[in-house]
Amino acid sequence: MRRRTPPPPPPLPQRDGVDPVRVRLPVEGPWATVREHLVERLSGAGPGVVDGMLDSGLVVGADGRAVAPDAPYAPGMFVWFHRELPYEVPVPFPLDVLYRDEHIVVVDKPHFLATTPRGSHVTQSALARLRHELGIPTLGSAHRLDRLTAGLVLFTVVPEERGAYQGLFRDRMVRKEYEAVAPYDPRLALPRTVRSRILKERGVMAAREVEGEVNAVTRIELLEHRDGRARYRLLPRTGQTHQLRVHMCASGVPILGDPLYPVVTGPLAAGDFRRPLQLLARVLEFTDPLTGREHRFVSPRLLRAWSSYAEWAG
Image: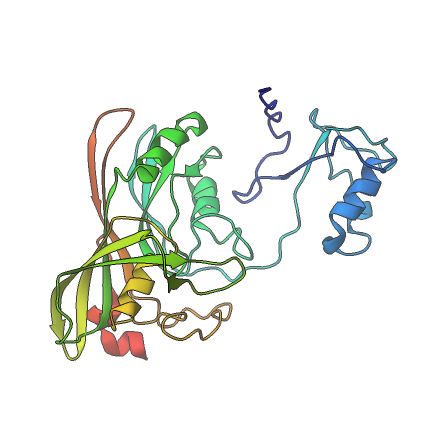
């Protein structure tokens, strides 16, 4: 089997921690010029956008030189450009670096900040902010944390080493401990281990439990309770999308501030930072695959619905 030739390095630098867009022209097609293909491929950008980029020299080839508006189509050619990003409301909470060495960076991510650029959250992502603030353009994520969830995230410094750290999560060699604030139900027998099959369909906001082979396992423990609320320790043994939120809801104690479970209330409005989801990735523990060092990181963050419920609810 022939190995696919890796693309050349990007000739454009990052902008605000965001990589340039790379487009590879198809091997076959009816286009006479690079412009014709880009106009068709980027039709959602709006009329005149591609022409404006080409006229301004913003589309470049592998040599870093601008692609001419009438450049002939070249099958397999790579071109790069920076897309104009819409304004994003800044997430007004700090992104705390807890640990940094030549291999990894561990941060305590606030609620509402995406881990990596995705959808409408690009510059307002932990990865983009860290690349810009730390001056490490090669930084990449070893795993992801939901945008609405706060807590510990591991990033890698060297691209060639990323696979080793991603493998820790894939092979379940990382011990993860979460904390949540949710209603207290004295009838709920704890600790308990929830096992189910979770399905998350593309285009559907909420995941759901379905019949079939178990793919999601979570241990739920009670830490303390007062005034009808409780702090729970959540120990996931698998990593399905929204697993902890689904399992807490299925147990009759949905996590406070959840806009999807048990009822989908729709996406939060841009700039609405009230009542964050009361879910925190508290502990991350693993053996470094490169140095052999035993790492244990603990977030010092407090969940506001527990430390100051009136402030959170107000």
